[in-house]
Length: 291
Image (cartoon, rainbow, N blue to C red):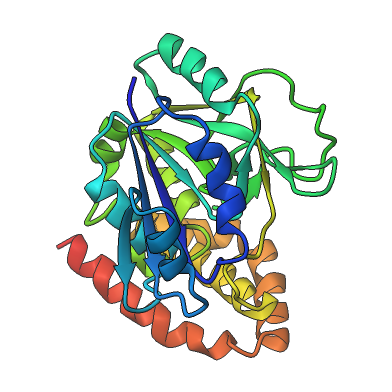
């Protein structure tokens, strides 16, 4: 059992020491820690370089997005398992001991696992993994339930990448041009990957004895911008996973959900009309990918 940790950072100077402390206090449980800084301008990169010189640091000149940063880390990673985690996640005490026990007994058929992630400062669950519906609606399993809920191992479609453990060989099996679709930039790239696992019939599991806490909104994006990415990236998933008659059938089935949501989006989101140019570019890419 060998683990590479992959962590994107962006303007998280005030968070990163708290996140790294429990990792660096657990020597021997992972083999490498790779941080990808996405052009931070708050001193994050310099803080990591000066305080943690032994950490592998990839420094981007600008914000390439969470998807691209994770891909950079996974491309560099050498180990059997990839632990993807955000810079605002705190692993609970005993996380690695429990993970080691789980991985020793984990069937070869399991592609990825999720911890029970708690919303920091609350007694509520943030995510126990992702469920992607036939309408490509994605939700975090267990979200806002009490932390004592979902106390047993549970099949999921894939983990939320705020904290996710992937078997590298399964990432390679579903890899397209990259592991995470970099067009998504931020939000939903983990759902797209989960859907690829699901389409291949790969098994993903949530283990409640693995716990961590998530502070959230460390990206720095406004709520309007986050809503835009969420809306757009679901449409990206539709373009990727449905073609021709299947796409027409999809929109007929999803009409009553999508028409109300779309009207509300265009009435309330100042970025809404960017959707047309973004979708056209994505459609062209997906068309070329299928030629």
